[in-house]
Length: 377
Length: 86
Image (tube, rainbow over all chains, first blue to last red; front, top):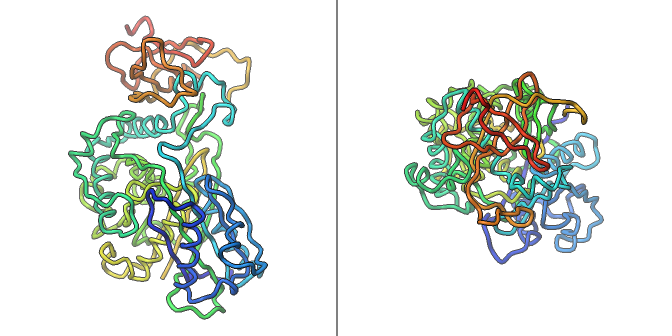
């Protein structure tokens, strides 16, 4: 199969500002094209989207009316991943040799206001206070911690690392270090998770320019695989009035296995990883679901510093969702941007030492969707 | 998913739980007349059946594996300690 290269990558500062989601998107695309050294007119196909900040194809009004086919993607947390898979297929299918993938978003404070009817649920679930996404995260890690001995201290260490890495990332939202003790004392949201263990909805954009190997590039990274999966029967997801008994299936596990298989690589080959950390428990569980350790090993692994920037498997080197916030449409491509910068040796104060060669990214979201990539220098 | 019209056992064990510590956004949440109080919720694994989401009316400590009896309420199911466990 034809190799697909990422020859340009950019993101905007995440957080909250007066900017619109579209303004973030235009800034990210312009910077990614400059990074690639290619003009907008050279882009032969584009894919992108947001969850709550409008349609990506309207960006042509600002980028230039070149006639480019521009496909809108709206796929929840997998919006970036789905745009990326589409871009890969466009190159492999011969549609174009230079393709854009862009994700952007802007959410109001305390966002994500699900209505029971939109999820096929009785209004009682909203009335009685069960339409709250954070409850799911609390209940999933509560069971996992019970089964595999994960302590609140470990959950706090994950968030502490996120804020520390965020402090080294110029575009991160949360750039102040927070100690594990402060994180534990920040107040329970949904047991066992505290306030500072969660990411917040925010705003921002990320863009990637992809190309075929025939295009001259100056600092490209190979996208070895990009995979999107939806849940199988038996998975544990948000807003489920009933679950099947037995060991839950995992869409993250399915997507990670498929991504590694397509790349011809395995978790032990990975030098730097980005794992969905909607909250601390998610990073802990996704370490195992993506194949980086056995269930329960996280307790020692995290305490030993293995997932720190200088560790054996640096995870969420830019502070992840916890330090960057989660503009849904942008989040997945923000992860890929970070790994591209790490593999290029351009990650500045948060650079993983030892010239990392293989990277991995993973997003997970409602209602049971996951996107993974494997990247190589 | 469980097809409609199936009779489920009423008792089971608590599979997981959390506490809703803050008042959910209204609407859709309708707080009690005397104001919001944190409440426990979880999944009860019914004996030989599926796991059902329920509000937990449990005085004292909630713990995984505790025996609970689930009651339909017309709204979200509620669970309270089973007789032999209380």
